[in-house]
Every structure is written in C-alpha cells, then in structure tokens.
Length: 84
Length: 84
Length: 155
Length: 155
Image 1 (cartoon, each protein chain N blue to C red):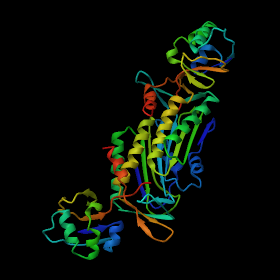
Image 2 (image 1 turned 120 degrees about the vertical axis):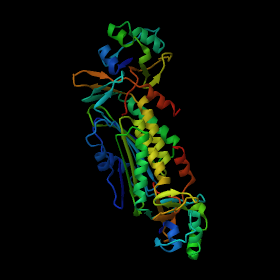
Image 3 (image 1 turned 90 degrees about the vertical axis):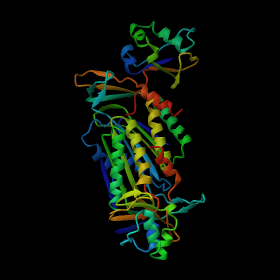
Image 4 (image 1 turned 30 degrees about the vertical axis):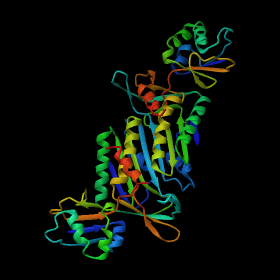
C-alpha cells in the first residue's frame, strides 16, 4: 500500500511517500493511523492530532472509520488552503 | 426648461430634446406630464401610461409627486435596460 | 473607483492589470463582462435572432449614476479598487457591452461587490437597448421584473 | 468544462476568449482571479510580509476534485462554458494563483456559479500554501473556518 504525506505532515514524517504493508488487523483508517504512529517519532508527531489531518483513500476523502479494504493509495494531509 | 426624451419615448414624441416654458400652475411632475400631453398626439401617446415611464429631474430619479421648482432639465424614459 | 462610459471596446486584461497595478494587497479580483447575445428572449417564451443592438444612454446622468453605484459598493465592502466600463452605440453580436470589476484582499468582498454592481447598474444606470433583428425592425428591449428583484435584494 | 493544473502562468484574456469562442449565446462571463498578496493575515490579528509562496498539491486527486466541482456547477446552473485553472509551485507576490470563469446566457447563473466554484475549490481541492517571509522561514498556511463556512452555504 502506498502512503502519501503532504505539507507539514511530509515535513514531520520526513518523506513524501512510502510503500508499506500494514498487518492484517489494520482494517480502518483509524487502525492505520495507530499503526503508522508506531513506525517512528516523526510519524507519531505528524498523526498526533487527527482533528487537523484529513485522509484520502484512493483519492477520495474519507473519515477515520472508513474501511481501507484493497486500497492502493492512502494520503494524509492538512485541511486544504488553495484558491486566493 | 429643457425636456429630454429617450428610447421609445423619443420615437413617439418625435424629438430628443425641446426647450419649453410650462404655465405657472405646473408644479409637479404629474402636472408637467398632463400639460405635455396637450402639446401633440405624439406627446400624449408617449406619456399615456406613466407606469412604464420613469422621470429624472436634473438627473435624479423622481416620482410623479415631485415638485419641479427651478429645475433646468427634466427627462422622460422607459425603465432602464443596460448591462448584459 | 473608476467609471468610464465609452463607444469604444475595452481590453479586459489591460483594464484589470491597470486596476491592480502596484497593489500587492489585492488577493482577489472578481470581474463580470456582459456581451451581446445573438438571440433575444421574447416575452412569449420564444427567441428572436439579433444581429446587432444599439445602446442609447443619458449623457451626464449615466456617469453620475455609475459613480454613485461605485461609491455605494466602496462603502459596503473593503475594496482596494473597482472599475465600471459601459459602452454605448451600435454593437454586433458577440461584442462586449459592460465590464464590472472589483479587487480586495479576500474573495468574498470582491465577488459580492461585483455581483452588487452589475445588479444595481441594470436598474439604476440610464441605458436602453434597441435590438436589430434580420427583418430590419428594431425593438426596444423591455425591462425585466427579475432585474428589479435582483436589485431589491441588496437594499 | 475545462480544468487545468499547471506551474505556468495564464493569460486571462486569452483564456476567456478561448472559453467563449464562437458561442454567441453567451451573454455573461463572470471570472475570479486569486493573487499572491504580499501580506499574510496571522492568526493573532497581525500581518506578516510575504515575499513568495509555494503551492503544493496532490497530483491526480487535484484534477479529479476540480473536475468534480466543475461538473457540480454545470449541474446546478445553466452554463455555456466554465474554466478552472490552478497553478502550483513557487509564486511571487502579485502573481496569479487561480482562475475560475463561468459563461451563461444571463448574469445570475454566471456570477453564482463562479462564486460557488471558488468557495468549493478552497475546501475541496487538495492544495497547500507554504508562505515565505523575509526572515527566511516558511510556514504552512492554516485553513480558515470562514472557508469551510463559505462552502457549507452551498450544500
């Protein structure tokens, strides 16, 4: 599974993209976040407050309860700030 | 006093502008309209339905009850249709 | 803060560039351009081909009303700049009739003020449209109740 | 009906001309341009000088979201044409960031759809701004509650 990080999450994790295989008991986005937080202190720091982090699974916005299933791409990023 | 006509009122009256001196008992716009309607059948036709005519005195929109006073310029025209 | 009534066409990009020249506090520019359509909506729901139109106006009063509408927008929204250009005379289908543009630090003020200006202009600025159809007849366009309603919502 | 995500600047007049080319049923073109301001609003009410910003985005998802927002506007309003251009990469103060434009027979649809598109884009399109200040520090711009509220009003 490809995991992407954008903006300050990328700065904290220390990479933009990584290929990971989460354990079988990781079912939801919340499970994935909990597991990723064990990977490094950078991961833990980036994902410490999910109130300020949004998640997209296969390029669709989802909530923490979303079941990941056979997703190929999961992205974590702050609320968006494009436009003017 | 200069009287101006625009759009289809100009077509009906037959001129864009005329210099007239209304009698002393013409006090309001309504009085002026009644007096102008006696000037020609074109005037009468143009001013027959004041529901579809707007009036400006010295370039300010006014109602029929407006007292003309020492106005120099009175204009009659249809509701406006500029823009797109 | 600038009002122009002219027969000549205008260059949108040049006008907008001039409007925001040197002001880096502008984060948002909203603009509206009205164009001559080749189809007129008839009152009966049908449509008629329009080859050209002539825009008549009331010189002197037009500029005064546009300046007043512009000042009203400035009073209601925090604008860094605004611009109204309205053409008069004979225009062909596809030609530009009017430009309204507003600039502000943030988008909401620019967008709302632009919408306000064009709505208000439609019922307050003394312009009248004479549409020419292929049979050679010209007819004066009637004002729409929807335009009056659009202006009323800003009062 | 056209969405572009690009590093290059865009020419507003050329883009709008292309959008309405040959369509004389367009009577109204509303457009919005977002620009890099040289002052950032800080959370504490103060302002900080901004010399440049870098716009990061999520390639693939960005285009998908913009196309979806554009389709939503097409479904809600009778538009003859629409256009969204959003830049990414490093931009200096005064540079253009985003263009949203809508064309329709009459002004209300064009103006409302344009306002809708930029509001919606602000909360749905995956872009993030990194502002550079003269002291060399970059800081990621935080999302504003007012942007979420602006999007909510269209739901």
